[in-house]
Image 1: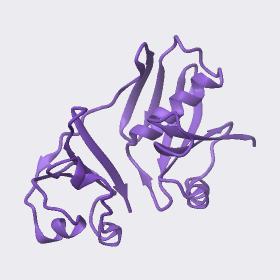
Image 2 (image 1 turned 90 degrees about the horizontal axis):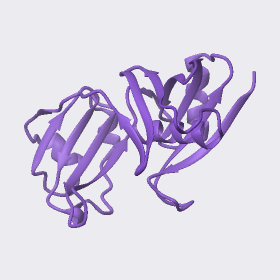
Image 3 (image 1 turned 60 degrees about the vertical axis):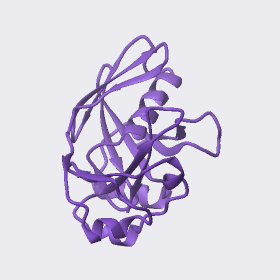
Length: 195
């Protein structure tokens, strides 16, 4: 079996910034435990595994060093980038990824890459003492979708340099934590943390 391994820093043109992900193009299926071992050894927030199913349709799975997750934006972006950049798929053709969260369509557009994710609307939740212990700044609002907490803080300065309590996060019934705030330059600013 041959594989192709790529490292991509999404949302950046700098080699040392952005959201890092490995993308592994498989030529044959491999067992989940093997994928998990590879993701653990590579030790980036996400390792994306691609396997061609038919023309322009790929199975896509995302693994953190500790578990498989249902949806990852920057892992999807990295996977699409590699397929187009390496000439596996011509840039004028959209890509469909089959994933645990459904079919995801990705297209190359003038502004970059456009991702069409299925929606999994967050539900507002109470700000409990446990939730507040996750972050070191006051929480304005909190919500939860199927696999993560979404927390809003006051401003970008509160978010910059924030290091949540990942040990506590690992004990909670979610795979990740999104912390967001209003931005002075953009619509909003956010960071995603996984245990």
